[in-house]
Amino acid sequence: MVTTGGVLGSFRLDGRVALVTGGGRGIGQALAVALAEAGADVALLGRSHPAETAARVQALGRRALVVTTDLATAGPEDLAASVDAVVGGLGRLDVLVNNAGMIRRSDALAHSPRDWAAVLRVDLDAVFHLCQAAGRVMVAQGHGRIVNIASMLSYHGGVRVPSYTAAKHGVVGITKALANEWAGAGVNVNALAPGYIATDQTAVLREDPDREREIRERIPAGRWGRPEDLMGAVVFLASDAARYVHGAVLAVDGGWLAR
Ligand code: NAP
Image (tube, rainbow, N blue to C red; front, side, top):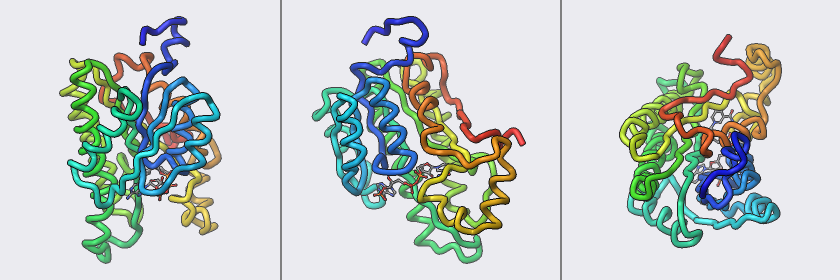
């Protein structure tokens, strides 16, 4: 686990084990592959089998472990059991990436209790309980990295997504609260805030030509992000290179927030 190779070596994750939620597609797939490229074995936690991602991790010569858990129904004990399964299956846990997420779009006046509860459960409750379960392992071993996936809606109110905005603001709150508690124990808790990334989650925005153009024209980089644009940032936050970074929210947004 000793880092060699100077500053570039400090970005490597050889011998580390990372757990990524929702790694089967979209951003999570890119993050899982990035961590494997950097040297980590990867556990993939989700409700569906991430066959393609697991194959890509293995093709890089790393181990992949699939842990089947539906974050919409799993309680804290189930999530603790999932973390135990990772430690049991891959021998340790060094990195947790809380990526899985969902969104429900409707006007606030029409936002149903069911949508509110579902989004908060997956996007906020599960994030905290996985942090807690992983944190128990990481604090005890005196080393760990947690990367929570935030959003531009951790900063802004958004349009017709009140539960998502509430959850993503909460993700930043959890990140800072846990960073305060665990920095002294060698556990770094940070967030990564993607801008507007072309995935299934944003397909509905890109299918509306007016909305697509409105968003694209507001991005200083002049294009939607791609999941691959986040790969460097997650490796950084998961690595020794980020050893003194605690409670930060790293925006990878093509300049959206600077506008
Ligand atoms: P996506 O393509 O819709 O993928 C969502 C992932 O979350 C999938 O792997 C999905 O698994 C998993 N997931 C959803 N509900 C789940 C549940 N109940 N249990 C387990 N896994 C569940 O979305 P994405 O764009 O890659 O988003 C990934 C993360 O980035 C989310 O937290 C999202 O809020 C955040 N984000 C996205 C953007 C963007 O512009 N795309 C911007 C900022 C932040 P299944 O395949 O089984 O459905």
